[in-house]
Image (cartoon, rainbow, N blue to C red; front, side, top):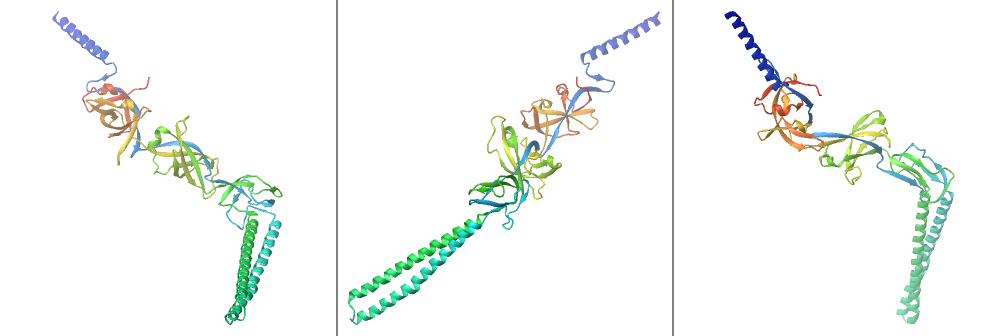
Length: 396
């Protein structure tokens, strides 16, 4: 009988122990407990590393020429030749003009002006050598005779007046020479203006006239854009304007040229905002020395940003703001101890920036992979241990 009582007591104790364990598990069903270990369920989120606080944003844009000018004749006439096919390259070489007018009328005008100049020069020479010389000699002789009392004073005054008249005539002849020289220069310039040359190396983007056409002064013959450099104007969100790193070279990827990537430079930024989109233009200029790129090509502009108020030498991590917890008046996050992700530890967080995008940018002493706990972190905050085992759970 005593043996039966002993067996019953043993069974009762086992049942009580089982009930106690079940009750305990019912209080913390999310915690797995073994004889030596308890694990806590968590979910991870990736933390992005921003070296030295440097971040970037990729923006779409189109290439455009920084300079685009119309080429036109400065004088009127009929076009004799026009070498500016759309898409062709023109050079700033006077020996290779873009176009020229018929020149005969301007050559005749120049010849007529030169003839007028020669006549004016001859008249001036006569006035100086013949008229002035004769009048001055007569005046000198009259003065000697007047000193001897041979001629009256009024005759000497007449000779002086004659010299003054000849000097005035010589002055008029000199003015005529200057006027004729100006007419020659004007005719030469008009003749030179019958030719137009490119002011820089560029590409013809529009042809606006044809050979044989009669054009007026200032009528555009074609439009040329500069090709040695091109601009890409990207629209930067206004909330990132203060973070724009203007001293770092942007990276431009030209998709319509096989994905070629090259560095550019920021020429200007934020000269005017768009109130509808809340963006500001950033002009990035790239070199195009080999004529690989053209206006209108699609590009991606990578602009560098300095975010999070990073100091020199600091490494900023960007991660969901919800991963930051407060423990004892200090801020922490929970990160895996190693790549197995089977244990976590508390990591002090020095927040540098709380973004409106739901992200925290902070200095972290990461002990392992760039991951933080974003589900289960508040339960972990109640645990006093520095490190403890966890298990990853799938999202609901």
